[in-house]
Image (cartoon, rainbow, N blue to C red):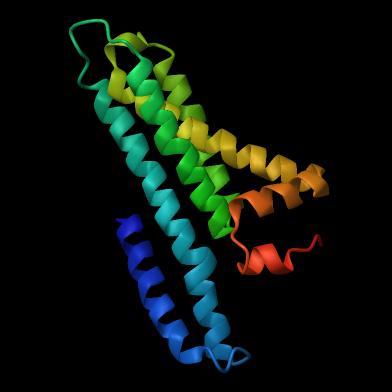
Length: 172
C-alpha cells in the first residue's frame, strides 16, 4: 500500500511542480518538493522492499519437492536488488531506505538460516534481492562518507549530464 501511495504522491507533486517552475522560491514549491523528494521516494522504495520481504516469507510456505539449481534465482535476485538500489541512489534519498532494507536483510537471513535454500528458490531469490539492495546502498553510503573522488566518479556514472546532482554536487 505504501508503494501505491508513494507513487500517487510522487505523480501529484510532479504535476504540481509544473505550475511552480517560474517561481522556485515560493513556500508552496518548497513544501511540494518535500512531498516529491524524500517522502514519496521513501514510501515507494520502502514499500517495494516490504513487498520483496513478503514474497520471501510467502516462498517459505511453498517449498519445491526437488532440489533447484540456484543460478536463475541468484540472477533474478541480483537483477532486482542492484537496479533497485541504483534507482534509490538516483532518487538521492538513501538513509531511511538503507536502514529499512538492512533490517529486512538481517531478519530474512536470521529466518532463512534454518532452511535448505535449494528447496526455496523464490525465498532465496527475494532474500538475495533485498540483501543485494541493502549492500549496494550501504556501499554507496560508505563511498560517500569516505571518498570524495570515488563519490564524484559514482555521480558521473549514475547521473546524466544536466541532472542537478551531476551539475551542483558539493560536499558539506
